Length: 419
Image (cartoon, rainbow, N blue to C red; front, top):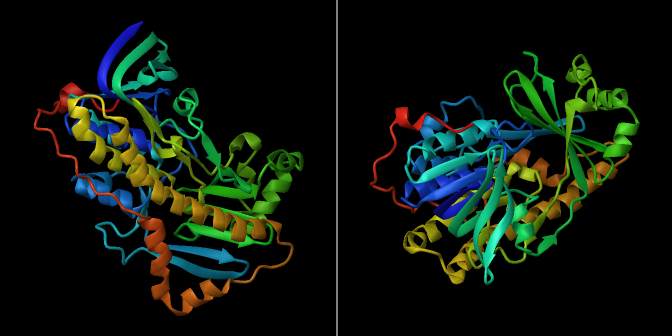
C-alpha cells in the first residue's frame, strides 16, 4: 500500500479532470489525477472540440500547437432532411480566435493536455488507478482509496474532485442525489470507411423513423445511429443484415461499404442520459463535468461544458487551495457559477429530444423541412444563432488562474504523457 498527500486529488482523467489538473498544476497547486485505464484510447467518446474550448487553448497560449494535431475543421453544419439539404449553423462569425469546430479523437485531446500538465512539478497523473472508496472523517471527505496492478493507493487531500463521468463512483460513494431529466433515445456508434467521392464535411441524415450523424474522420466516418430508448435488443434481434440495409437506405453512398459491419461487435451502444446532481459538493468534495451533469449527445456539447466547468473551478478554487482546504461555501460558488449554463443546456436538449427527435423516430411518412430551417436558408445570417448556442454556450469562462513561477520539468525529465 502506498500513501500520498496532495492539496487536490481529481478522480477521472476525462476532459474535466485533465483540464482542471492542468490548470491547478500550472497555478502551482499540488494535484494528482487518477485515471482507471492504462491509456486514453477509448473509441466512440465525444470529440467535438468547440470554439469555446479552442478559445481556452488560445488563452493558455497552446492553440497553435493543439491545432497541429490531426483534426478536421468544420466551419458549418449541414443536414439532409428527406431529400433536401439544409445549412444549420455557421461558425465563421463567432467572436473567437478559432471560428470552427475541431473534430479530434478524445484520446489525442487528453494526451495533449497530459503532456502539457506534466511539465509542471506540482502535477502527477496516476494511470491504472481506479477509485473504489472515499476516505471520510466526521462528515468531511479527506481522500480516496484506489486500486492498481501494483496494489492499493491511498491519497489524502484537502479537496477531492469527482470528474469520473456519468457512472461516477465518487458521487455514488458520497451519496449525492441525482435528478434524472429523461432521454427518449439511445445511440449506436459505428465506423464506415470513407470514399473520395463522399461529401467532404460532417453531415446529419434525417428521414422518417431514422436519424444518423456522420462525423468526418479523414479516411472513415464515425456514425451515430439514433434509436428509441431501450430498443437495442429489438434492433439486434432483426439481425445485422437488416441494420445494414437500413443504413444503406438512409445513406445510399454507404451501400458498397455497409458489409464492413460484420457483426454487432463492430458497433457500440451509448445509453443516453440527461441528469444532474441536486447538490454538487459536500465538505472536502465537489463533482464537475459528467459526474455532476450527464449530457445528451445533442450538439456535442459534453466535452465543452466539462472544460468550462474545469476552468470555472480552477478560477474559484486555486487561491483557497494554496492555503489549505476550501470551505463548503467556496465549493458552492463553483456550483452556483456552473449550474445556470448546465440547466440552460439541458433544457434545450430535453426540448429537442421531446419536440424533434421523438417525433422523427416515430414518423411513418416523409419528413418536410421545418419552417425555421427554410427561413435560415433564405436568411443565412440566422445560422449564426445556433452556431453561437452550440459553439459558445451559456456563460463562457475565461482562464484567470496565473501560471506559477516555479520551474517546469524539462522535456527529457518529463518523458511525455503517462499513457
